[in-house]
Amino acid sequence: MHPAVLVVGGLVALVLSVGAAATLGAADVSLVNVRDVLLNHLGLAQVPVRVSEDAIVWQDRVPRALVAAACGAGLGLCGLVLQSLLRNPLADPFVLGVSSGASTGAVAVAVLGIGGIGLSGGAFVGACLAFALTLALARATRGGTAGILLAGLAGTHLFSALTSLVVFAVADSDETRGVMFWLLGSLEGVRWDDVVLCWAVVAVGAAVCLGYAGRLDAFAFGEEIASSLGIPVARTRAVLLLLTALVTATLVSVTGAVGFVGLVLPHVARLLVGHAHTRTVPATIVVGAVAMVWVDAGSRVAFAPTPLPVGVGTALVGVPVFALLLVRRGRAS
Image 1 (spheres, rainbow, N blue to C red):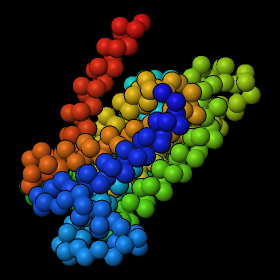
Image 2 (image 1 turned 45 degrees about the vertical axis):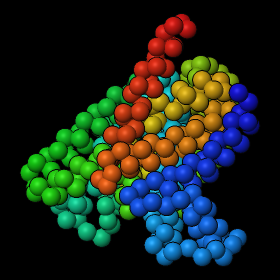
Image 3 (image 1 turned 90 degrees about the vertical axis):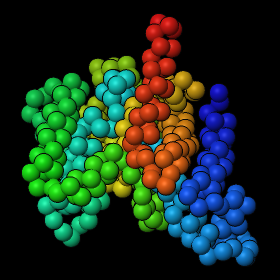
Image 4 (image 1 turned 135 degrees about the vertical axis):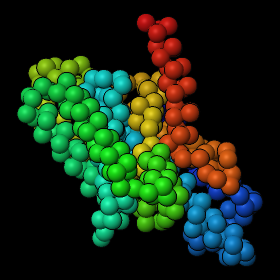
């Protein structure tokens, strides 16, 4: 499939998916009502709409769908970069320990009562601390790509243990329930400022990755070949690792831990457009955005009125898809 066709088709599918997702929920809202609300707020029409429907669509469902789309696009993009940079098809955004660090930061705010920065702020601080630890360990071991993976694994287990320790030792039953729901991924209560923040970091990430597309292509053949082509390996790796950490930390601080997105979507994009990063970067973004909107919509209505944590939904969908990709790859080899 030509990448331009995929991107244009994906953007159209994203607009339609957001509109369709806005109709789903405990309160019935028709697609016509969604259209009218969006046209009113975009200043393109003045159609009478009930106040309740306007609030449901504009203040709740549309921001939620757009944040879900940003989460799918951003985490998928980070997974693509890490899989190419580390030459590991199993690498995903959480391999750097960012998710575990974010969980610890969020728990510290919610359970220990560390005030002033909020749950999202605590998650972001924890994610950055975990990434700093990963880089420090990798630098100390001088293990290159393998050292980064092992340092990320160590950081993941350390911060997961710290999270469990705080919850076990301090949290009461209500706090534990709230923390566990967040750790499984939640898009409840997102607002328009979250939409702006998430899409801003995704846009920056996409621009940088497209600028580094040629270097990522070279990294796929190994660091020695990349260096022989005149690419500053250490600096490129540091820039891209920092970028993926910041994008992941920002998204996780808003949505909680959402797994399998960064692992599966890059493989789907490569299957559709090949391995050149000028193609896979935009393909991963649009495929991830559309897929995540529908996973979130399904998670929201599966056990309505109680929403299923979106991280559970991504795992239920991601595992079978990843298994199919593995089978297909095995048969092709």
